[in-house]
Length: 130
Image (cartoon, rainbow, N blue to C red):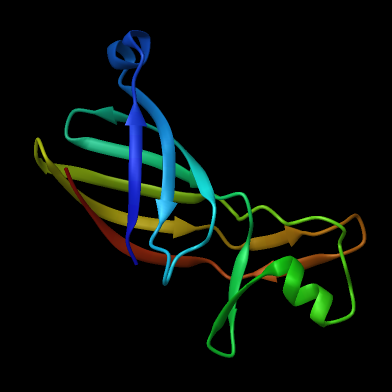
């Protein structure tokens, strides 16, 4: 699954090795919406966090929002549920390329005060080119 990053650095962020920006997933296989990216560089290492506004799951071969899934089960939380943060870590192999691992921590996705959904940890690999 691909995504496109649009990153920016203020002069202060550049000095301290930080960046921020937006992310858009590949439309056919990713999550709809525009997410936020925050991260940093240190030497050859890069770390960043991707936050998408709406949580999606794959059920019976289709991608649906957690809210839509809950509504189909007869429970409407009254709002979209934000996606768990996706944590990226990696290293630059050149000035224009990096690769590493991503992780969505497992735990409970809190839907309301009375409902939480256990979510498994998910991991994978990524590559970045400019």
